[in-house]
Length: 105
Image (tube, rainbow, N blue to C red; front, side, top):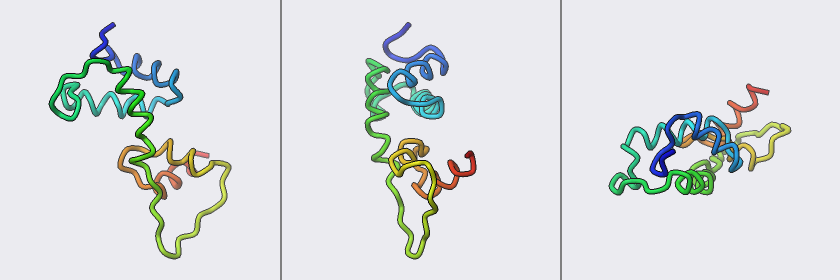
């Protein structure tokens, strides 16, 4: 097993489950870094993919901030705002994530 990158998406998924992530997050992480040659900030070669995965999870909420629209009504659901933010895809608005997740319920 390499410290620089997971051998398969399944290896990434297994690790993401241990740090509180899910398979979608693992696949986004894997696809993102696979597409840029496992480089950090597009320049330096990754040294420890598990540390990068932990940072990915820590930073997930920074990229999934709620977007408030004037006059928008939020419906009640069993999911908290934090749950929706954690499960949002990178670049997906909070409202879009809420709609997608509610359709899955």
